[in-house]
Image 1 (cartoon, rainbow, N blue to C red):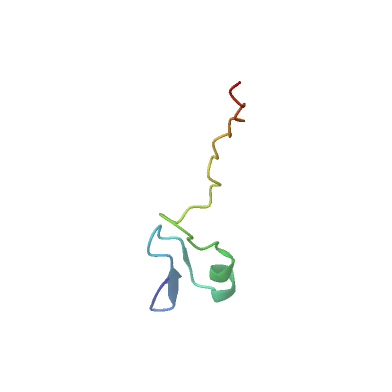
Image 2: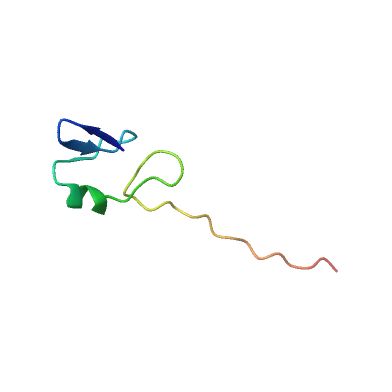
Length: 51
């Protein structure tokens, strides 16, 4: 996070807030670029035993 002149923001995606409690509600980055979208997970293909 970046704090300057009363503004709080995520440096990775520029989500900003003047209110600290609202800033804390913005979900933070875990890996990669900060985003509020959920990642699309690939479906796993079950492996069948070869006879």
